[in-house]
Length: 429
Ligand SMILES: Cc1cc2nc3c(=O)[nH]c(=O)nc-3n(C[C@H](O)[C@H](O)[C@H](O)COP(=O)(O)OP(=O)(O)OC[C@H]3O[C@@H](n4cnc5c(N)ncnc54)[C@H](O)[C@@H]3O)c2cc1C
Image (cartoon, rainbow, N blue to C red; front, side, top):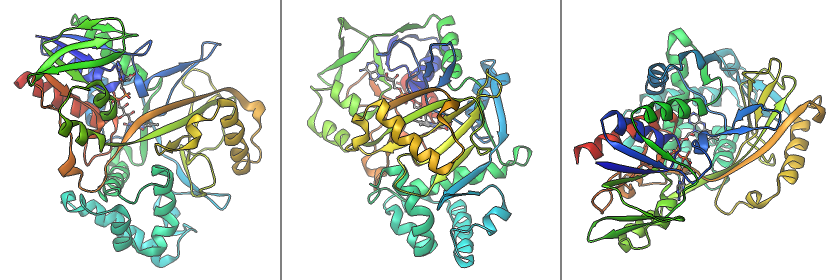
């Protein structure tokens, strides 16, 4: 069977890898110059490279960790203590251990205990399906109270969903709390967070090398424009350079991108896909010649800041240099998407100087801005009813994306598990 995979992000490359491992003939079609998608890398003129977006791996991410080991990447995987904190009213507050929590100034004592109780409750809520139809705000107010919501959850939700979270399902915070508290549940690696020294691009690279060794084919610079569907089955694949035919096809792209490729599809199916919502992202990354702060991640509570979090890691190859990410999630109508890199640099750095008055622009060795329209699916209430599955109404045509990962967060761990499932679904058909 010759199987086509559209999209050379982690999902597409992992699906291709598992299918090739099972002996299938697979061709990956990627519109970019190289593989990677959200896991791509940026290269600067002096040869220095950085991950386009920062990716971390938690000790509980067994599928990714095992995959890295089987691909010979174990030496690349580094775990470090996860110093996390908040910037509130211009002050940095650590949020790493129980003492930090008990002295956290953003909440009164009663609300601190409410927050602690809530985290325990989220961890023990086994039946997440009960939360599917509940708006996140309603649940948070119910279990944590108004004060905790206003001081902690509102700023976090506003930053994450760019202010548009009214219809977001409570499963989002449930999944987030469970994932974050799981960092502290593995005694051997208590409080640590891992990352691949050269970014997730090394995982993409290792997967594609293994895939090529199994006679897989990768074609970059090919944009799929249209997928023909006739008589309930997959037809030809039209690219900007010609047409291709496959026995089966997996579209490893976001749901709105897939819908655009299917103008001839059933209107009911297209209508369901149109409901899929995604967040976009603008993410400046800087290489500094000195450390900005000892924190791996700092969440900002001030909604006037153009970025919502500061993430910092040492550069893997330049001693003393640090890579700093300043991401901002965007709703579809966010104005920042159309703003120039120079204007973004000016706005972002002026806010950074307010947080770190000693920060000086002369420390910036490199600065680049990445933008992506479909980075994370937004699971609104009743996601269980509206799910767009792996099998499409057309025989031989499959969809694989993070919109199908639910209720878990769309992490690389979830992508690897989903990619294995998708490959198995195709093989079983
Ligand atoms: C800022 C950020 C931080 C993250 N942090 C973490 C983290 O810390 N830990 C973690 O585990 N996960 C993290 N993630 C999640 C992780 O990056 C994603 O889940 C994963 O990369 C999704 O991969 P994908 O292949 O589904 O999508 P993508 O990477 O978007 O891949 C889709 C690919 O399809 C291609 N394509 C699209 N249209 C066409 C077309 N018409 N023809 C041909 N090709 C096409 C695109 O060019 C792209 O390469 C983060 C994501 C972001 C954005």
